[in-house]
Image (cartoon, rainbow, N blue to C red):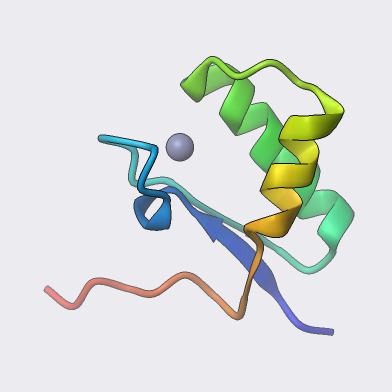
Length: 67
Ligand SMILES: [Zn+2]
């Protein structure tokens, strides 16, 4: 199974958010990201939002910044 993630740093429409969320399944990832989008970004939980989030899934794990 391929791990997937969403990284707010890679979304040009999101400013000042550095959260990355990853999970092993699409359903887990979608639920976690929807909750984050609603709580932090003030989005409405709509089918359109979920479609946009699903379209932004990346394969692998979030890139780590090398200090
Ligand atoms: Zn965010």
